[in-house]
Length: 202
Image (cartoon, rainbow, N blue to C red):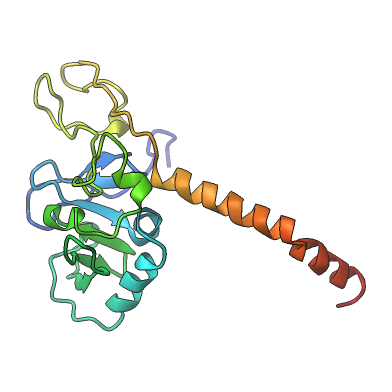
């Protein structure tokens, strides 16, 4: 394979038939439809955006569920329709492909998901915005489809496209929580006790 023949990730498509999805980096990498404004995200990243335990509950609900949903944005197989834990606003229905570990979130479901308050409180999103991407999915100057993978400028008219100021993202929150858990283990003495037990032969 020549150096220039680098394989690209497969293009994802809107399950509703609105065309290719556009890469967005808001709250971590996900693929947004600039037609219907739904988005596709891995179950693992979505779990970081939801209240604790909600991601695993979605995954468990999809096991053995009827595959009567729309086609997966990636593999195009029918997805399973599952319900997220209810919130005060209602209950969100999302579609999950266990083959690709991918979740499709319709626009109407975004504000109903049990989202972590640190994310919905971000000014760029607001409490009613759900998890939708504040990043532009098309150039405000010429209207061409735009992805952050293209850089900071429209690939067609070369207009600079501003990045939405997202104060907090799901990957950052997950990393911070992991550091806090590690620090709690260190301060509790469990790590030292385990090391000492290992040295002394269990």
